[in-house]
Image 1: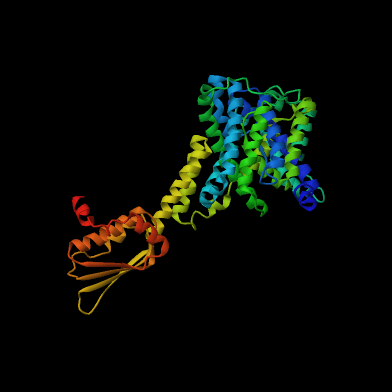
Image 2: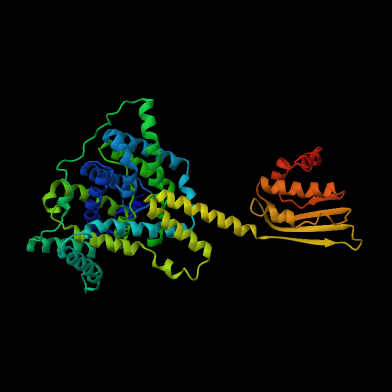
Length: 495
C-alpha cells in the first residue's frame, strides 16, 4: 500500500512540481477563454479547472493527465447559458457527472478498443489544428511587438533544453512565460495580457447548490445538454488517456477514468464551475515538462487557484504572446507528423479514415462527430475487407451427380451475396453437400443466405446436406434458419 502510494504520488517529485507549475500558468488564459466561449464569468472556468484538476488527481484512472474546463465542452454550453442562465449550466454539470459515473460502472471505457489507430491519429491531428487556430485571434491585428514576443518565446521553448546543466532541469515553457513577462514589464510594452481577458476572482470557491426547481421540466431542459457533455467529455478524456499511455509507455484504467471524470464534474458543479474533461494540450505540456504521476495534476490545480486568488496582480501581467508561444509548441508537439510521412505507405482506407476524422472535427469543432465519423468509416472498410476473405470451391464426383462445396472464411452481411453467387443452381445434380468445417456464420444475413442456397437447390430437385457447422454458427443457424422448416420452399417462392 505504502509502496503503491509512493509510486503514484512521490516517485517523480521535481518533475511533477515543475510540470504542474507550467500547466497551471497555461491553464489560466485557457480557462478564461473557455468561460467567454460559454458565455459565463471567467471565474466559472477557473473554479472548474481547479476543482476538476484536484479531484481527478485522486480519483482518475490515468496518472499525469490534466483535466479542466475545455473548449470542446464550452461549445456545447452556449445555447443552455444563453436561454436559461448559469444555474441551469451548474445543474447540467451535476447531471453530466452522474451520467459519466454510470458509464464507468457500465464499463463503457472498454469501448475504446473499437476506436482504430487511424481514428486516434485523426483526432490528435484535428486537436492540434484547433489548438493552433485558437491562437490566431491573438496574432491578428496586433503590433509587431506581439510577433517578436511570440517568436522569442518559441525560440526559448525549443533552444533552452540545449543549455548545459539547467536546460534539462527546468521546463522551457516555464522559462518562456517568466522571461517574456519580465521583458514585457521591464520595457513597458503595450501588449495584451492575461488581465485583459477578464477579471480574475479574488476569493476561494464556495459550496453552492444550483438554484433551479427540482422537477421534470428542469430535467427536460438540462438532460440533452448533460448527455452531450457526458459523451464528448468521455470521448476526449479516453482519447487523451490513450495518447498519454503512448507518450509514457504505461497503461491506465479507462473505466476508472470515466468514473473519475464524473466525480470531478459533480464537484465542479457544486463549487460554481462548469463541466470539463481531459485536455490533450495541457496533458502533452505536462508530459513534455516531466510530469508523470498524480502529483503533477494536483500541483497544477492547487497552484492555479493560489495564483489566481493570491497572485492575481502578477498573473494578470503575463503577456498573451508568451502563452501563445507555449500553445503553438503544444500544437506542433501534438500533431502526428509521422501520419503525413505514412500517407504513401499506409493503405488508402486508413488514410481516408484519418483525413475524414480531421476534417469533421475541424469543420464542426465537435470531437464526438469526428470520432463517430471515423469509427463508422473504419467499421465499413473493415467489414468490406473481411468480406473478401471467403473462398468456395466445388468438387464434382466421377458420376457427375454429386457436388461438394467447401466454404472457407467468414459469412456475414458483407459477404453473403458472394456466398450465394458461388453456387451453380442450374447444374443437373442429384446431391449437393455444403461443407462448412472452415466457415463461420456471424449474423442473420448469413443464415438467410444459407437458406436461400439450400432452398434454391431443393427447388431444382437436388438433395442438400449441410455439415461441419461449428458450435457458434450452429447455434445461430438452428435458431434463425428456415430451410429445415416444413413450409420453407413455399415461403421462398412467395418472396
